[in-house]
Amino acid sequence: MVLTVNGERQETEADTVARLLQALGYEGGFYAVAVNREVVRRPAWPEAALADGDDVEILTPRQGG
Image (cartoon, rainbow, N blue to C red; front, side, top):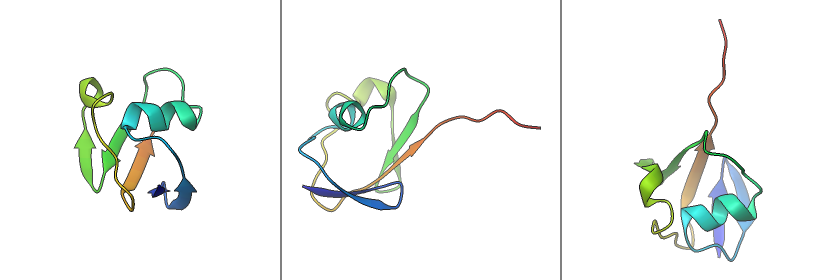
């Protein structure tokens, strides 16, 4: 399947948000994820299905001032 992840086209076999994060090497839990501009809450990641053509944004918090 082909997804757009953070603005870049990605081919993946991952069919859920959790599997996509794992496939892309994201570790830990300090992320926010949106699929097609809808925030996906962390408890739903294992069941949150992805479909061909979805737009996924993975955000990490940053400290600044």
